[in-house]
Length: 587
Ligand SMILES: *[C@@H]1O[C@H](CO)[C@@H](O)[C@H](O)[C@H]1NC(C)=O
Ligand SMILES: *[C@@H]1O[C@H](CO)[C@@H](O)[C@H](O)[C@H]1NC(C)=O
Ligand SMILES: *[C@@H]1O[C@H](CO)[C@@H](O)[C@H](O)[C@H]1NC(C)=O
Ligand SMILES: *[C@@H]1O[C@H](CO)[C@@H](O)[C@H](O)[C@H]1NC(C)=O
Ligand SMILES: *[C@@H]1O[C@H](CO)[C@@H](O)[C@H](O)[C@H]1NC(C)=O
Ligand SMILES: *[C@@H]1O[C@H](CO)[C@@H](O)[C@H](O)[C@H]1NC(C)=O
Ligand SMILES: *[C@@H]1O[C@H](CO)[C@@H](O)[C@H](O)[C@H]1NC(C)=O
Ligand SMILES: CC(=O)N[C@H]1CO[C@H](CO)[C@@H](O)[C@@H]1O
Ligand SMILES: [Ca+2]
Ligand SMILES: [Ca+2]
Image: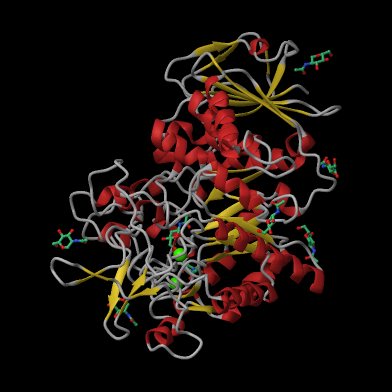
């Protein structure tokens, strides 16, 4: 019933082209994370301090001032923990230690200290679903050492009645192609791995595991981090086995013919189980307890989930229990991936979040991460300013993946140079569909040797080809640049009461034009207009808001815009070039 009404709401939202009005949040006070500007650092590719071609903690510390200068208020770091780097840090062998090639605990403390001096919050990546198979926990579990017997999801498998041979317990598929079960000779059982073979799934039905992972959270809170971004939540729990200890098979989904691809089967039993929601609530309690005991600011919980809205929204919490502060909103990525970029698809992505979000919660907007092609490549270079404007003008929190602020594009990486397991588990004909290397190329600081990423002679992944024209140094000195636009947007977001507290109205006008208006009593109204089309258009904004008759002042224009900042424009006939995006104000 509840699901049905949600669905109806969704369909209504998609069908109507009416302007949508969302009131401002009614929360009493604003906590730091509610108006935060988050920035994702992929440590391996951000800045190398010692010339080995691999980014590291000291590199990050040396660039914290850059973040401060951008106006960013919090950074979340992809995993920096000890790891054999099969999945570049998402395969952790020691959750309590730093990867040596990234630095030491001392370096980490220096990073936290410098961040505090600059009033930047540091959030760590928490990877709860699995460890590395090199983890001591896994080694002990293989040997059935006391206390570790059920740390992972072990199973005898099945015997095929025709062939008499042993087979995996189910047909379940991993994310990185192929079976999610691996035979372990030593223990003489299969183990579950929803990601790579080297990433065995932890068993959350074991209270010892649950407690161990809470220890991980407490350990890093004590080191002064401001919270966690939790990785890969959908596959945390699997369905409970039946009375005989058997798991059910998934059925063929019909969405691809490729039998190795995870999408070949449904994921009914291996994703989005109700116990996962409750676990997030438990982690929230760990964070809140820490604050209650030690004082200080709130620690934040961000959740990575590509789940449907009915599941995702539950992470926020329910009537009696608080959950994640921010379940990441990937709709601006996923809707456009499926349908392409257009004003109505942008509207659909926004509706999908705002119309499903429980009252009083904080929305958030994400354009990219280290798993998705770079925003400028995915949306088209001509749309990067418009998309950056969108996530900063919409209400709530916005998250930038390193490089989006300068318009970095995907690198081109040959099959021979491919290192991502998702790419490597495929073949030379199809790897480009799977590999995530293109969006992980080194950050482009300068147009000089190795883009200023390293003083060494090599880089762990090749540089993207356009680093001589797309880099921080050049964009800081150019009169107009993506970087300067980004900085103006962050500054506006931080200074404007309307953007922090105002109500929101948005609409698709004349197919290619998307408008967002933020208003607050006694404060200047802010209007964003984007032309997603490839022809020039004349827009009448009084169509959108009858009251919008006074001229509007231009605050920020996209990089190719020929309009002058500080000039007034008639809202009843505003001309927009192809891909042009403008931020205007009533002041
Ligand atoms: C937003 O509103 C809340 C309460 O309504 C208030 O505490 C907060 O100071 C306001 N923030 C700004 C920037 O106006
Ligand atoms: C790289 O080399 C330059 C020039 O020799 C030097 O100024 C800089 O400090 C070095 N940077 C790092 C991170 O080693
Ligand atoms: C981890 O798994 C890989 C792939 O099966 C295997 O080659 C390696 O030996 C394993 N490592 C350990 C320490 O078990
Ligand atoms: C048993 O093995 C045969 C041959 O590999 C296969 O076709 C069949 O699907 C298997 N049966 C089951 C129940 O898995
Ligand atoms: C909220 O979630 C908690 C923890 O999962 C559960 O015990 C409780 O029954 C839920 N409350 C409501 C009102 O749904
Ligand atoms: C809490 O956060 C605010 C805003 O970032 C900061 O200025 C303040 O120093 C922090 N307080 C503590 C105790 O860390
Ligand atoms: C337009 O102005 C009228 C009268 O001042 C006001 O009542 C109404 O709420 C305004 N409408 C919008 C959409 O701002
Ligand atoms: C966006 C993101 O963090 N993706 C990660 C999800 O989890 C898997 C396994 O830990 C990683 O490979 C992804 O990079
Ligand atoms: Ca290094
Ligand atoms: Ca799992």
